[in-house]
Length: 243
Image (tube, rainbow, N blue to C red; front, side, top):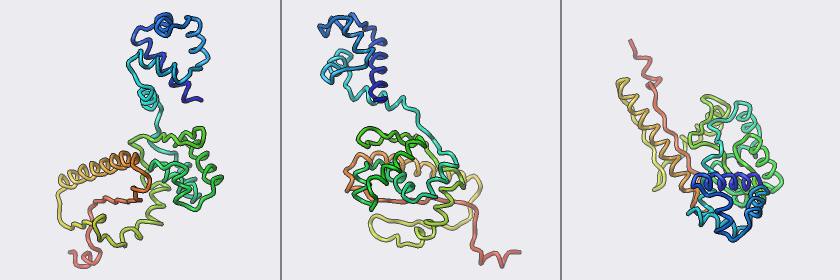
């Protein structure tokens, strides 16, 4: 309901920007001006009438939806307390991972052994965290920014180091859809900074691909992790020979 209300507000804004008044709209729709005013005051439109007004504006209804999405505030980071909640509640963390990757509730229930009430409990909690907006019929609107990050050394990063990092890096990186690159050498500080910039760009590209692939059919996507890291480091065994 809130979403529909915001879309009507955007419609009014579009009419104002094009200098179209209620009387002009009434004439084009062959309705009385009072009927038009009532429609906007109650925000009660038939789809046919909404489509006709969009046609007058030279827009599609989908354009209004996109404008609404663009105006919706997005979060760039959770609070530390919310991150703690995620790592202390395995089903909640799982559902959070799924919705970040644009899964529907049907996708989650199809892939994982969660009951529908449990899944909805998690979605309600994520709605309270402002990660998503839980819409009618349990549809999910993601509310995280494209610049969303976890806290440096926060609960999520600590969880990853504790539970996943060693398992991930010790696994096999063979086959057409896996690769591992290990480089050891001496670099200047300038070169290190240049590589960090390149690594950040690859991370951004990963996010772009993930967002775009969210539009692909569910069965064509696969859970995929990528770790990019660089720092000043040398083998511990070498330290024994240092002067």
